[in-house]
Image 1 (tube, rainbow, N blue to C red):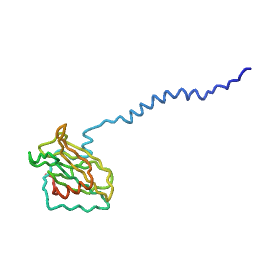
Image 2 (image 1 turned 180 degrees about the vertical axis):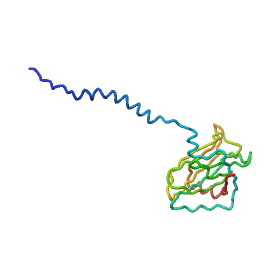
Image 3 (image 1 turned 90 degrees about the vertical axis):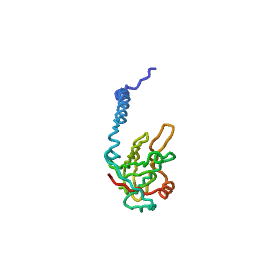
Image 4 (image 1 turned 180 degrees about the horizontal axis):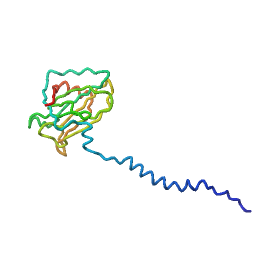
Length: 192
C-alpha cells in the first residue's frame, strides 16, 4: 500500500531561508544602537560652566536655617565635607565650584553649604576644585530628576585612599545633611 505524501508546502521555503538573514541583521542593529561616541567635552559642557569663571567665597556662620521649600520648584543643597584629611589644614582654603546644566551656580569653601531652587525635570550637576591644590580627580558628575516641592542633598567630599586623593560627589541622606548644615557655615559666593 502506497501512502500519499502531503503536497510540498512551497510557502514554508522562503520563510525558512530568511531565518539566517534575520540572525545576521540582529547583531548589526544591536551594535548600531549601542555604539555611541562619548565626547568628554560634551559631557563637561552639559553640566559644568566655563573654565575661566572663578568665585569669591565668604562664609556666614550666623546662618544655620533651612531654606523653605517652594511648591513649584525643587530645593537642592550642596554641602562640602573635606573628610578626614583636610587640605585646609595644610594649604589654606579649599574651594569647589558647583555647576548645573552648563553653568556655574556657586561655590563652597572648606566645610560649608549653599542651596538653590531648580525647576522640576532632569538636571546635570558637576563639581570642580577651584583651588590651586587639586586632588586626583578634577571633576565629578551627578544627575538629578527633580520633582517640585522636594528637597535634595548632595555631599562634596575630599577623599584620600588607596589610589590617592580624589573628589566624591553624591546624594546624601537627610539626617546626615541636616547635621552638616547645622554644623557648617553657609557659603555665599559670587563670580570674580
